[in-house]
Structures are given as C-alpha cells and as structure tokens.
Image 1 (cartoon, rainbow, N blue to C red):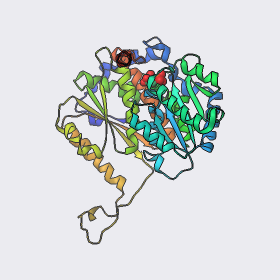
Image 2: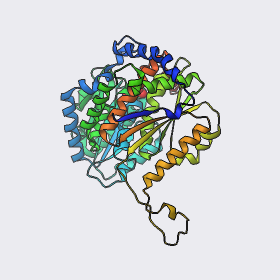
Image 3: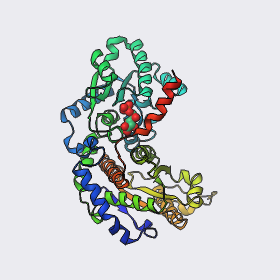
Image 4: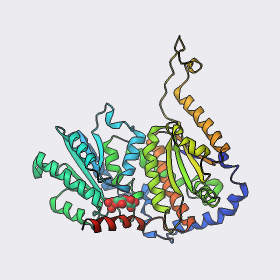
Length: 429
Ligand code: PA5
C-alpha cells in the first residue's frame, strides 16, 4: 500500500462506535458508485481508467512528448481548473516547484489560460522571446473563455514566428472527441489532437491526455504513475471501513463535518505538496460544495505557514480539521553543518538530517493542534515516486466520490461555476 491512514490523532474527537454507525452509509455509497446508479453516473470513466485507458492514444502522447522535448525550449500549457491543475501538481510533486529553474534536458513548462491577467500574459510572452515554443491547449468543453483567449494570443505568436505551417507542428490540442469550437477548429487546421473521454470530468482527468501530455513532457515516468493508480483501483474496493483507508478517509470527513468541522486543511510539510493541494482543493471543493453543503477545502504548507496561518489553526474558530500528507521517504537528505563558534546556538542540531528536524516539527505541530482542538488525519505516503503519487491521485478521486455520495450531492457536476460567467458575459455585452 502506498498510503496508510493514521487515525490516532483524531481519536479524541471520533469514538470507535462512530465508524460502525457510519458503515452502512459508506456501503451504500460504494454500491452506488460501483453499480453506476448514483447521481452523475455518466461521469464515472475515471473509476476504471487506470486499467481501461486508450492504449493507442497513450502511445501517441508519449511520441508527442518526445517531439515537444526535442523541438522547444518553452512549453506553454493552456487550460484552467481541471484542465491544468493535475498536470501542474504532478510536475511540481515529482520534479520540483522549481522545475523551470533546475538544470534539465526537458523544456521549461509554463501554465497560461488559468487567469485573465494581462501582466501574467505579458510576462509569459517575454519569456518566450528568442526561444523555441510549443503549446498544448486543453479544454474539454472547448468553449472556456480564459484558455480560448490565451490560445488566440499564443497562436498569433507561433504563426508570426514560424508561419502557419510551422505553427501547426507546434500546437497540440486536448479536447472533447467531437463537440466544441476547439475540436472543429483543430480538425480544420490539422493540429494533432488528444481526447478527453466523454465520461471523465475535468477535475478527474489528470490521468487522461489532459494531464499526461504535459506530465510526459516534463520527463515524469507516466507508466509508473498509471501503475500506481491501477494498484489503488484494485486495492480500494472493499466497502469494509477497517480494510479500506480511502473509504475511512471519506467516513472521517463526514463524521467530523457533522461535529461542526466545516473546514478541512490539507497540510504538507514539503513545498512540492503545495500544488497537489491546489488540485485537491478543486477536486473536493467543486465536487462537494453545492446545495448549501460541503466541507470548505483549504491548504497550508508547513513549517512556512506555521508562521502565518498557524496562529489561526492553533487558536482561532474551532471549525477545523487537518489532513496531513506525510511523505515518509522524500529521497532527499541534507546534513546540518557544524559551526565551531556556535554563533546561533544551534550546534545541538549539527550533523542531524534536515528531514529529521522537519519530522520533529510535524510531530510537535500535530500534538499542539490536537491540544488546540483540531482533529488530525494523517495520510502517510510511502515515498515521492510516480507510483505512489498515481496511487494517491486515485485514492483522493475515489474518496471524493464516496464522500460526495455520503453528503447527498452529485460530485460530478459544477452548476455554480456558470454564475460568474453569465455576469461577466453580460457585462462584456
Ligand atoms: O472540473 C471541471 O470540470 C472544471 O473545473 C473544468 O476543468 C474547468 O472549468 C475547465 O473546463 P474546460 O476544460 O471545459 O475548459
């Protein structure tokens, strides 16, 4: 198992008999999901995706990634929400949040179309100056404004730089199989296209071409990612809470919500967890926040945020619980140097590994927050490998579906996203 759920830090808030009490709801949610009889059952393609993915398209993704790696210095990924968060989360988790600054033989990767900021766009355009560029525009609907505008801008850049023919070789489109403006346009011009399966919604699409093409360009081992997800698919099918940590996580969230814990904070102790938390926030926020219900998903990276939000978590309103992603083996070690003058008084740490100090910060924080009235769920991830991350992605997707069904919402729609668009288009005339 790549993930182990440790519930002892929540035990003073959740009694053993509460698991037994909630088991029937979990079993019902499990049956609805697997029988495909629940709300949103047209969007369950992600459930068997790690086994049933399109192998021919997967081979094309790898070939396109190899081509992109060869012909460009800068790869611009255009998309918003589920059309960019997963790829960015995986790249930052497995490579680095500093990926673009590292020495490497793969292109720099920047994300565009995820805001409507002129300054961000100008900065990206200036980064592209004098460098070879490829783009991947990703939009399942093919009609979302933010990526559509960004695509216009970068298409113009590429056509000016390489001519229409040359640009065609550098533009890759990921969209719906048949519908949407983007698909029609891509077919007309002859761009290479990849498909977002009909039955996979945006925030569940990281293991489709949506996530896999940018991830493969960064040099991540996508095979291992898929194998990890498949291991989770096979492992996480027993409805019995005592045998299924994914379902136990969903159950704990529901129990804590009933006790007034309306905000869940995903905690990482490594900066490389930061973007994964953004992906997780979209997954749970957009899936559960509807019909006046849902847990508000928030995130922090410690120890950084212990010096900002840490105060609130320790001492503020008691409507919080934390879920800690604890990466057991990060693969990195760094020995704290000895200072013969001991000017900072830190020689008691000389020779100790920085990871050890981080783990002590984690222990200390856990106990402090529990004392402060904040239940903690720990998800211990074996290591920082593509396999373990693939496992964790599937773990969260399934937990989200079970949790959404337990809440009585459709976890696979997002009607609330339309409200701002209506107003914006009205204001734009
Ligand atoms: O999860 C979702 O469905 C959304 O967040 C979408 O991913 C997001 O709105 C972008 O949509 P599209 O890919 O159609 O441009």
